[in-house]
Image (cartoon, rainbow, N blue to C red; front, top):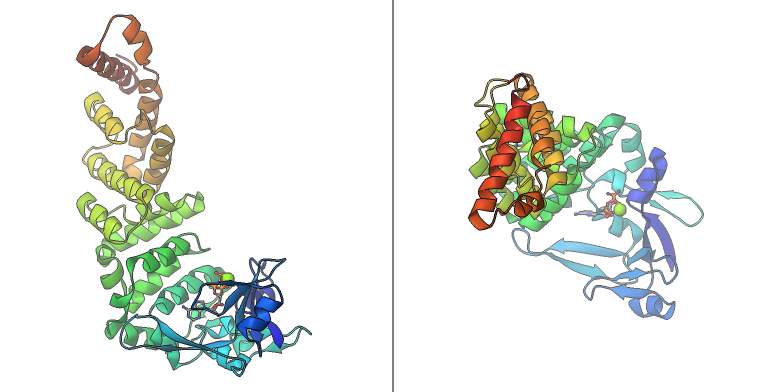
Length: 372
Ligand code: ATP
Ligand code: MG
């Protein structure tokens, strides 16, 4: 049996990038032989094993064939006679389809090394069309490697367009799409992911709200900004959808099965965007301000509120930026109201709630009109 380093580790090593995790392919072995060597099998259907010491993944060489139309899984064939080249052929991009033998020799039947040098993302074979997830992966690799000068070759763009025309994207389950989007939001140039999908005509299926040119431009601009600030996933997602009406953003976030923190941040950003864009700079009333702070549940979620303001700094037009300073100052004062103090003064029940509200309003009023 022979063992080869494959996929991302070979690619990243040749690119001079840090290798995150290493995947291995084993040729000429049976599951029984692997287990006898102390490997642990993971997954019942897949011939993938974990190394007893390093925990790294060792997969038996396999071929995959699509079953039926759409994304209904693959039939996997694995046996000692499956060659390394056959295993590499089922992979998505040529730069991901290289292997390295134990003696260091590169095995590269699909010219991945040449494509690395030409900074080209190219599909390995026509079998690429069997898995629509590869469209998202390719857009994500474009987003990751764009800063190094990489782009997708025209033939692969054409193939992906054809897949989209054939309705292949509709077969992807939301969980897998979200997983790719979530990763894409953290790639080196996250905006490239969405630009590629737009160019391919994939947004109509994936995030139709971003098809509108103005909404899209605002979204990628805000995403680039929050990426620059090293924002978290929720902030990145919310920035992208910042120009989408609140109701639509909520519906989209739900149907994409994005996690709750992403939905909440998106809802708040859209809500604040709508409210704040109604006001010319410096014209927030104390009541409006308190309503916004309530909507964001500042009282229990002050950290999230700070993240919200940072995101809004990326989504709001220049003319409204000063409103964020007002919100920040108002929040600082209003959170200082201590219900315990008011309890001691004898307020209870409904009256306590009103007293808290009045005290917060008074403080916000002082912040917003420092001279009066
Ligand atoms: P990363 O640095 O993100 O881990 P990677 O290239 O290692 O990048 P993985 O998702 O870890 O990507 O997958 C390992 C390898 O498996 C890839 O390099 C590719 O050869 C292959 N692969 C993964 N997913 C697919 C897919 N959907 N279709 C074809 N090949 C795939
Ligand atoms: Mg990997």
